[in-house]
Length: 300
Length: 300
Image (tube, rainbow over all chains, first blue to last red; front, side):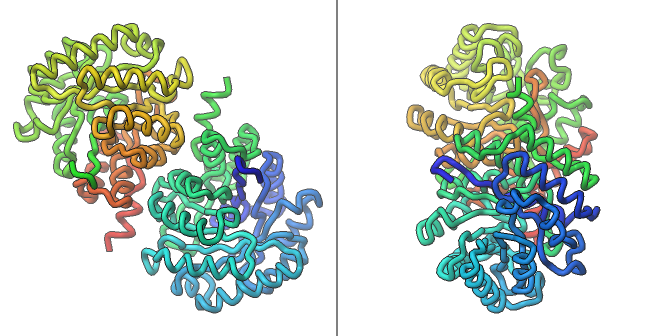
C-alpha cells in the first residue's frame, strides 16, 4: 500500500454471511468470493473455522479454501476461534488468520465462554505461532467502544490491550465497533492515541452502521491516519451474539468515500455493484449501501 | 447559543413535507410543528410562501402561521422565493425568512426560472429590507457542492457568493448540499475557508443523506467550527426539482451525533422519536433515522 492508498478487507463472506437466515452452500460462497476478487478487492475474509454447531453458516470453510483457485489464496483470510481453528485454517491453506479478543470480560464469556485473560493468552499463542510459521495474524479487539453487556469501554482498556497485541507481534490490530455504537469523536480520540503509540500502519478499523454513523466513523479514523478498513459487500452482516448489532458498513459506500477523499482503493465500482446484486440474490434479501446513487449520477 | 451548543433548524415541515405525495392539511402541519416545539427544537422552518400551483403541499402557510400560538412565532421561519413572498411572510407574522440562491446558473433557471444574477439581486433586496424591518434573513446557497445539471461546483464560486451575502448583511448563510453529493473532505475544505473569511457564527449547513454521508458531512462541518445545522424529522424530504435528491439528514440522528460529541442541543430525544412516529402517521410512509437504536440501548 502506498501513502495514498486505502486497503479494504472485505468481510461479507464471513461476518456478513454468518448472520443470514439462509445458509449458503460452499459453491454459493465460492461464487460470491470469486465475484469479489473480480472487483479488485485485495483482502477477503473468506470464512471461519468455528464449530458448525455454533455457526452452521460457516460449515465447510476448509472445502471452500480447497475449491478456490490457487492464485486467489494469498488474498484470503479465515477467522479462527482457538488453536484448533488455527491448525485447520493452516491445513486448508490460509495464509492469514484473524483472531478475536472481546475487550470486556462479559463479552468474552458470552461470545466464546472464556475469560478475557484466557482469550488474550490464546491470541498471544496464535500470534506467536503464526509468526514462527509465516502466517499473518490479524488481531481483533471487538466491542472496542461499547459492549452490549458492560456499556462504554474505556479507551485506556483498548490502549492497553492493543499495546499487548502489538508487543506480541500481531501483524494487524483491528479496532472493531461490533455493535455500531461508536461516534466519530470517540473514534478520533482512540485512533489518534493508538496511532501515536503503535503506528498507523498496523492499525485497522471495523465499523457497523447501526446508528448511521458508519461512514462518519470511517472518515474520523482516516483523519487519525488509519488506512485499513473492514467492510461488507452490500452492508451484509451483524453479530448474532451481540444484541443490537446491525450490518457492517457497506464496502461500496466505504470505497465511494475513500475515492471521493482522493485515496486509491484499486476497486472497480461497477463490478462491486454487480457483487452487491449477487449478494442479494444469494441471501434472498435486498442488500446494498448507497453508492449506486453516486455511480448512477457520475456514469454518464 | 454558547460555545458548547449546536443549534438545529428543523426543516421537516417545509423541505420535508413539500416532497410528500400526501398533502397535509394546515391542521396536520400545525400538529407536527407543535410536536416539534415540544421536543425543545429552537428553530423550525414552518412553511413557504410560494405559489400553491408550484408547491401545493405548502398552500395555506399564512393560515398556518395565524393558527400557531403567539408564543411559538419567534421560533418559526418561512421560505420566500421573492419579494412578494417576503411581504406575505411578514404579514403572516414571520420574524425569520429564508431566501434561496442556487449556486449555478442552470439550477436557478430550472428551480425558479431566473438567472443567477437576478436571484442574487433578489436575495440582496430581501436581506436589505429584512435588515431595515427587523426581520432575520437566512440566505441559502443551494447545490453548493454539486449541481444535478452542471456537476461539481468550484469552492471559489461558493466563497464569492457567500462573501456577497455576508457583505449584504445576511444574518445566516446556509451552505446546502441539496442533492446529497458532498463528501466530508470537500465539506471540511469549503467550511474551513468560509469560517476563516466570514466567521463560523454566521454559517450553517444543510445536508441530504442520499449517499449515506449525511452524518459524516455534519461531523466534518462541526470540525470546521459550524454550530448550526438544518435537519428534518425522520429524514423527511428531498427536492422535487433536483433529480437524485433524497431525504434530509434526520434530526434525531444529528441530535444523537451532536450529543455524543459533547454538544448541547436542548432537544429531548424521547419526544423527538414521538415526533418521528407522528411524521410517519401524517405522511403515510414510515419515516425515521437510526437514533432509536441509541435510545433503546441507553434508556435502561
